[in-house]
Length: 161
Image (cartoon, rainbow, N blue to C red; front, side, top):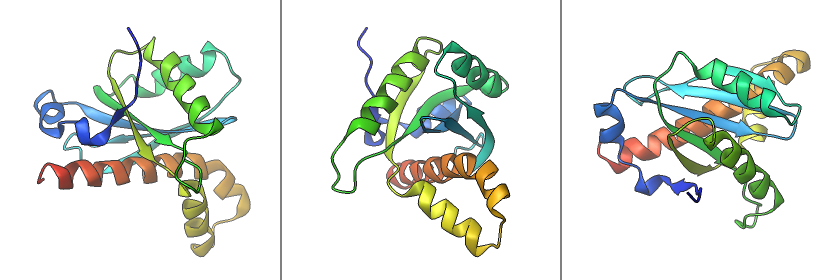
């Protein structure tokens, strides 16, 4: 079966709610993956963890362990478009990560434009006077929250919730 990332406009949030599912959000980087999940109303994103990557199935094992206590109905991956709006090498790497993850879980995957998410979150943490050390530990998880919250807001507005 061919894998593809859906556009969020294709997702029916009412179906996810009917199944009592939550939505996971991922900020996929070369070194780490930030992980967030929605509440059961699919309204609010919360951070779960940041996973250090080493490029093996271990990455997916840790990711799945961190999501094991949630009934995931959809996974949203941050789609790292270039500033000109075109998909580049980072999108290809994200797509490959999502394809590999899909061999471990059988849920739909969707993409959400994540341009500048890490920078925005980092700037918010600087404005909150968070130390560089604390920002480094929290930025990827926080970027996953930011990505997921944007997608949730879109889904809720689209479906009139």
